[in-house]
Length: 173
Image 1: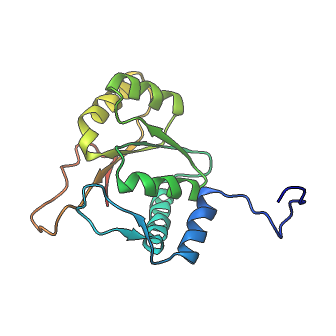
Image 2 (image 1 turned 90 degrees about the vertical axis):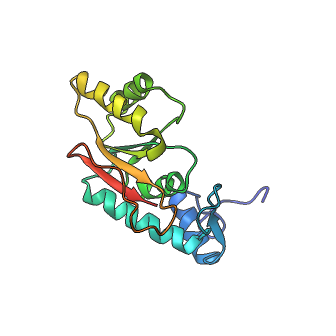
């Protein structure tokens, strides 16, 4: 397209949201998210878009608004992918915390970002709890914590860990 004048007829900016919308339209039944553990069937682009829309609505229900910060402290799991789409859908900013951080550094980043909500991978719960304790000890309001739990099987007896804080929710993937 060398020498072409960019206009609406031949150019559209790519954003995470427009990428998801187009993928769900053009490739609705193709795999979008595959769990590395192989414990769940792949999700299609249509399913991923629908889940992201529901997650964005849930974020709005938690009071997340335009320009708010939503942190996520998780490994490379399907929920992390969904959050990369759902958070911008609300107009909020995603603050992805490295899963290798210790509690002290995670608390510094939470304080600096002024995150309103933090999604926490169940595998990192201990580090996140200590980070949230440090945020509170610094005199700041800790973000609402949402625990990400992976549904590994259909066992009716399995239940998420107890919620030890009134500002805690659970996100089942």
